Length: 314
Image: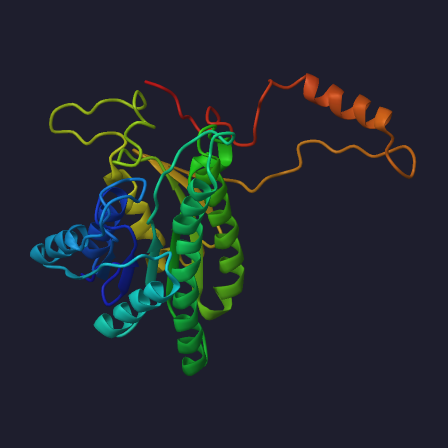
């Protein structure tokens, strides 16, 4: 019996640790050859010297289990290094079929305290990093499609966050970047579907070195021998599915995923609509309509509040 991803190749960025590692291992388990990308900086804020160690260790782990993997030390936010990453996948496996964008850093601070560099660095790694790899992968698929005279196989799985849905007071840079990832994903899904490529975004909850303080007090502690409810291994199977032929009809979607749960996020809908009785709204008319509407809603309520998606302390 063949494996779901047998004969396919994949790139997973930020795969030296945590969520990316679990995703790379899962794709390999399902039969894909994997390029394990990680810049290898020890700090979750992107600090420290780059190291090939994390990527090499995961690639070695995959090979030891009988899979195919090669390591790549590179900064996906650097345009040329992202090009080299895609070229490595094509050179090593003959083509690229799956791109999983996971690499990211955190530099948390309230908006009134955040520096320009803290803003730029997070936007650069998360949003530009997603764009760079997507750009070169899409060029590859478009050229293959033209040569084949029809659609080819391509899958993109991007990593967003519930921070873009519910807000995150101390993460204006991160929340903005993750919202941008969703916009990039839906645009890419429309642009590449005629070439046979799908693009989807996941909003994972996973306890990793980047989120250990964020999820402190959330979820339930695992009993001895059981998997933590927020372990990255709960997220990886969805990535494997979205990378597979079975998910060919899933495109331009945002999915929240964590221990034993997947939620498909509906696109924003109009909650209320008001029409002016005249040609142009007056201040008084808007005050009466909108102030009255929001007076009946919880203060500070935002689209996709965390409670709606079931994020509770436990």
